[in-house]
Image 1 (cartoon, rainbow, N blue to C red):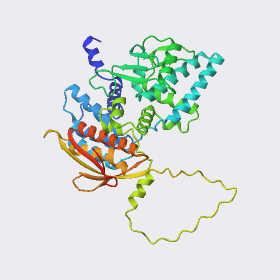
Image 2: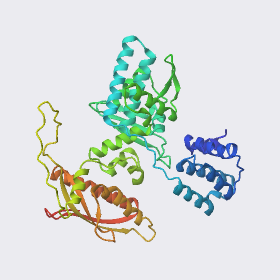
Image 3: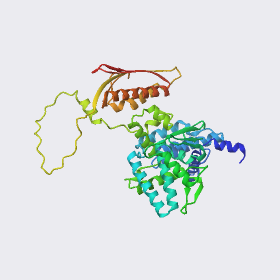
Image 4: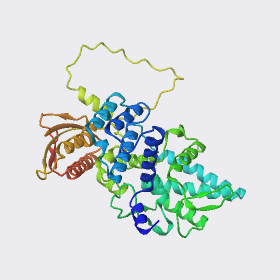
Length: 438
């Protein structure tokens, strides 16, 4: 391979190259399609696989075919109206919920970490060096993967010489390429030292035990304890993770994947009060839409929000409720929550969204994302047809917590507006206390 070919190959991720080659092979070899293809052939290919392949897989196959035709100098048949119409029909007739990995919650991470610590101690006591290496590596991989929200390919591309540890503070990891780095500029990821479940301590333990001074961080280890010069493969992390979960006694390990650590961290950070902007910067998301796919809507205060929306109903003809009967002396009385109930603030939001310039075309998208990301989880009521006036029911434990929540909402709204090339003016008003936020 000459120098020019090396640079061309380096411009594309290995996963993308393998994925596109597999798609072309499927079209040519398995389906017996001819290249260059016609729009009719592409449409028939989609129709033949509509019931067996997910819509995202079909999109990936089309991207590969489009790329092949562009590289070979042929017209792109995947952009024809016929192909677009067939794809739209497939989405309509074979719509299924998107399958997402189960988030790895912090309690599950702790359960696996405790099992690994026990396994490391047992391996030390029994002189099981291969087992000691594997458990120490896996513990570092789990903790670093969770606390940094790394993708599987980012984990396996980490190199020892590109990681700098500052004792007592944390570590910085440099990645020359990752999925979100389209311009291949590289990025530095910081990871703090923690009092518990510390990824820095686990990393140091693995590197010191393995005697690594350079090369891949997470490597293959054979049954005799020989450490390979090659890194783990990204697609090997899913069976590795599921095996660890099963051994640690976690229920339904097959529901987890390598994305579970990323989703788990995102959910933990959101529950701890991180706003969308700082979470996106930390994890490396460039688009709000990508970020919210990893976040589940919070369920706290959901009952209170439903009940608040029912208060406007006129009193119904109520039947008398019999008085409660005393429980038997030996009956188990469940622990009920105390009167420390969540309060509800009824807040009116005034919002004006405008384009930066005439060339900006994302006004409707920005409006929709603000509603979906910021308003819908608070029992949103749209008060006018223009979408400039809303009423939200926001649960809170204290006024300080309410101030922080609304400040985070405003940050998210301005971030979404900026990402969609829009100007935003927004204000919140609680009439009950005449409180204002903007």
